[in-house]
Image (cartoon, rainbow, N blue to C red):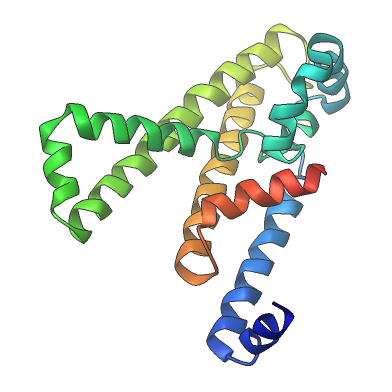
Length: 190
């Protein structure tokens, strides 16, 4: 196994792909530390501990601790995963989407684009619900409209950025990008 890994580093293209993937993993971990502006992180963390206790460990592992730290990557790629599942189910139910899927590469690109839009829509819905919940629980440093919009924008942008990173890893790096994003988050919690 080590010999295979050593031989992989001798090939420039593979070395470049591995380096790109590694850089994206660093970006993911840095983004997991950036706080959402306007949210009192300590208050949120205490509330989470008191409310959820040990039941929260699974979600925390899934997000790499981003949720409990209330970072810009708190939503992680869960909107993308949900969107992908919805699109797969709709492909079965809607004949037009089924036709697109059978068109080959062009059809799959169209479905992937629709999946991205649905992802952003889901992220907006989730981040809006979270921002309103934060305001109702007095966890925001600024509870006005601007504070709510800031939280919604930060969380939605973080989720969309992670989706983009996953796609970039798939295209320019090594492996399936979304799976690698999940894996690095789970590993970081261990």
